Length: 479
Image 1 (cartoon, rainbow, N blue to C red):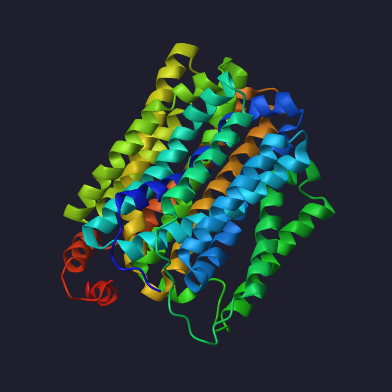
Image 2: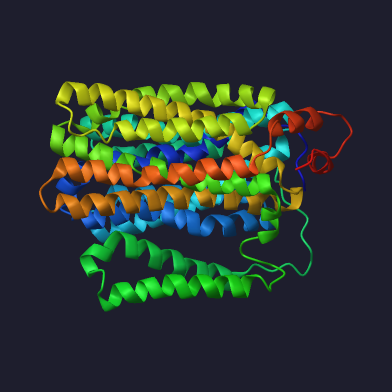
């Protein structure tokens, strides 16, 4: 049964809380590495895997979860994700060594894979026009805002209550979200009777992503010319070729390539991956400040207050700008401002006082960029999607975010780990941060080539016309 356009503020709050279980609580791992390492005695390499593996598993399964939500129901997948979030958080609360910690992080990743595309699809099912954009802005508060707040809130909890309390609170938030969403009517798309899920494509994709992630995170430890590393690289390359050869011939694909016929959707997805990869460098910045400058997790989190405030303000500002001038201009501005802000955190040669001020300003600038980017990018992706594929399309969009963040973390921490082993922590942090800034250039290029002028304005004007089907309006808008 398809939900009518009957969204409510209660529903929005429930969805935001569901999204926070990943972006606020699960993501708090980026700021509590020293605390967990001291408590559990786990190596830095293992902790880097534990951090990045959540986003990796989220990215790997999010498209599958989006397709399943279209078939079986978006509410059902949201609740499955919340139950998994509780289980994953409980594993972390009880963890005394690496295995249970990593298992919990994997479950959290699968939880996020269920929640993110399903909640985006629920928003599109229940809201229209400007109300949809408003709802997506609040969704972004949970996503981008949660990611910006995780260092501050997670750091405060870890410093004054203990890091396990982060995940106890995550369980509580999951329960509240389920209560707020319990009365939401189910939403699912009509599917052809012969539609089947592409498990083969999912399996190949998982092998590719795991091999690539292990190559990046452990290649230095394995040895770059060792048989194991060469085998992992070979699996990545050969697997990618096989994936495309197998998938392109199928009717029911794991990744629906037809969605990328829309230049705007392609631009939103690709730039989202690249922008998220830039954000992955925050792990290195936070770790460096604690280990080299003697900050507590809470003090480190205080440096990100400007980022949090900027993101929350600029998400709504970005929405209003998009409605007036379209998505292209704010997305271009964001792709310039975000890396500029992050690059300031790489100035590790500065003395303590100057570095603290510089880092604060850097995080604030990056928050302005991320907030400006969030709603225009997501709205561009959602409105360029047919109703029966919105779950899959949302899954691909959020897969790009999760995989970008995962590989951003993996690349920056790998560079940091290699150089810090030489004893030069300042150079290690600077290099680990700056290496991902390179993602900003292709992000800007993709946006300029794919996102048309006045995109958001055209769609907004068309989507509020009464009596018209939103899908046909989107098509008629020239997208």
